[in-house]
Image 1 (tube, rainbow, N blue to C red):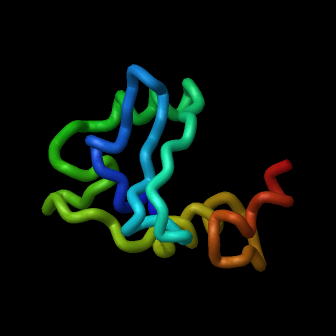
Image 2 (image 1 turned 180 degrees about the vertical axis):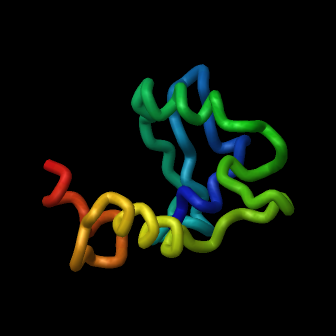
Length: 93
């Protein structure tokens, strides 16, 4: 998942873009994508402690969101959800 390995240097607040590096992209090509103002504001409010936007207390990037996602689904009362954030799309529309 490219968001988990996103580095601070790849977030351009002035241009409101996020760059996905080739090493983290499905198609192995670097690309810049527009960032919605809500996303940009959220990224700017995150603690700036290290190289990665989303990092563990030891400074390493997260490798999975599965456990937290499963907990969130359980607490929300969602059952039989596909074990990815995409599995909730039709339930949240």
